[in-house]
Structures are given as structure tokens and as C-alpha cells.
Image (cartoon, rainbow, N blue to C red; front, side, top):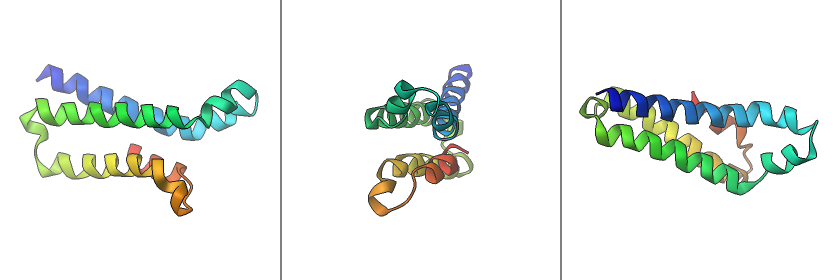
Length: 104
């Protein structure tokens, strides 16, 4: 059980990192051209999403108590929103909103 606890915390931390990336990094990017390039790099978005979704999936796979609707439904929607943010610009939606909704 402690293993699932730490995996769940890691998934939450990675989702929070996505939210911080969307909110704080643009502010920091104004002060540094290097951060501006990194903030907009598509590969960074893909890496963050893969890590967050992978961490969430390991919790579901390793802990039977995580396989209940009270956990799976919000976690599933969070993962869908974070993943959907990768494709949001193709549909004319700003990627920040789905990322923040999914991270919360």
C-alpha cells in the first residue's frame, strides 16, 4: 500500500507541474529568451503528459483500492483533459484551460 501512496503522490506532483508550467513559465519566459523557447517546445509538453499519465496508470495497476469509480472517474477525466491539451490548439482552444482542469 505505501508504494501506491507514493505513486499517487508522484502523479499528483506531475499534474501540478503541468499546471505550474502553464501558469508560471510564461511569466518567467518574459525575462529569459531561453525559457521562452523551452516553454513553447512541443516535446516538453509530450514528455510531461506521458510522465503524468504513466504515473497515474501505475497507481491504478498497483493498488486495488484505486480501481473504484470514486477514484477512476476523476483520474480518468484529469488524464483526458491533460492529454487533450496536447491537441487543443488544433481545435482553436488555448491549451492552458484543459491543462489546469486536468491537473486539478
